[in-house]
Length: 460
Image (cartoon, rainbow, N blue to C red; front, top):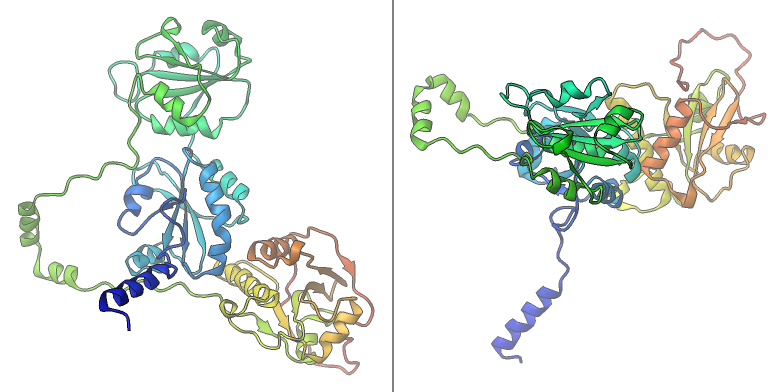
């Protein structure tokens, strides 16, 4: 038997060897800013910079799949915009997740500074879940406080004041041969908003270029308050955020971000205010607020288990567009995506998410169904379309127009991003289609039937 001290040491060693489960999806070293209900207002809503915020749950498979692309986007947007994440699985964060209308994971929202501080505009991000697409969407929404100058505007702008200032303010000018205003110069203008006026001059404005002695593009010059071209300081460093901020800081300090937290009111003031409240208002304040509704998971798509159901839904002469997931032999039942890792389960979950997204936005979408191998018509449909019996296949068919299209992912990728993009392409009429072979569409019975008004689904 081990001595007590040795037993304790052994137990401690075994506990230390156990893997540690992180509470959230992102570590402290991640480039993604981790936000909570307590600091969301200060870090995001009050910020002068555009932010993209991911509302996630650590157990969410799609959130885990998004993580590499999201962290890459955070690195690419460093210094230009904020890339943040909120763990909605934590009880303390559920109020902000409910307030932002989160109903599924991951939900991405772009927060754009408004005209009034603390009143940002919030947009749902509906683009591809790739680093490139996320970066492009955020960059497009960075506010532009950069003035475009021509030769005739230059004198008036140099003499201008900033708001109600009695004297002219420092000026920074980017001389460039580009017609667009880059994200970097826009971010700098935000950093020094109210302290330094920032402008951009095209190389074709020859009078302004010669006046400041600019011979290469791009060139940044800094004009101190009240100065002219004679006092201009030419920047000779790298065109990167940190050294440019240091260069401009010699005439004015950048705006703090996040904004400083205002000091708390004195306790006496608080007690005095509470004493002045009517009893009913105080009672209302003390009453517990109802917790926000938890995000609603995407319901599973409908399964067409009989030949009659399949024909009525998608394979009649007047049927519009349908998407069918033809399930392989081993996928007889639809189970929860989190409990299975097969391609069929991933595909079913992705199709469910696509349907759920359009339902939440009340946008038109043709129906998406699953067809188990136990459906007697599934084998015949596979044979008619020359599809392998043992593979998962997703196809779109349109009985009225007589075409079909196969989902052909690279590396068997049935992720929500790929499936959603494929469905969108069909909605927009993009991509090639094949003619449906004869016999796929079930002919209508010859006897007369009462006309039935059916809702048609088709691509937009």
